Length: 95
Image (cartoon, rainbow, N blue to C red; front, side, top):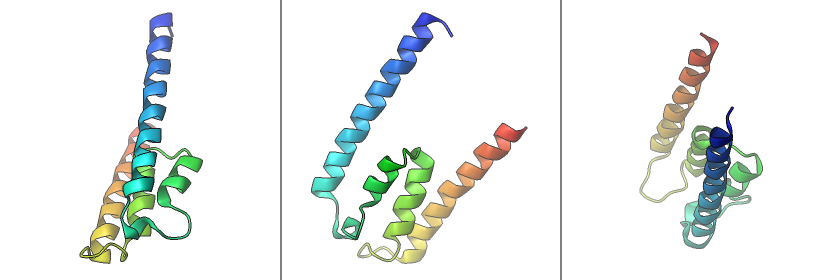
């Protein structure tokens, strides 16, 4: 890896972390009642350093049946959708 690639990767990592911190703060202050349960999903997602796909699985599974006006099955289908992306990614990596 050349110096430019290393700097670009590090810059991307810094921006990603900054974005995650801003998103975290926003969710903590503006999140709906469906996020106020025991441990906040965002706390777990960040503590485990989950990627976007896995984070969305956690979010939708923990939200299922808790968000007013959204049937639990809808959130579970969303979680399933992200799980399918994760499986496809792993299958692609195995080939």
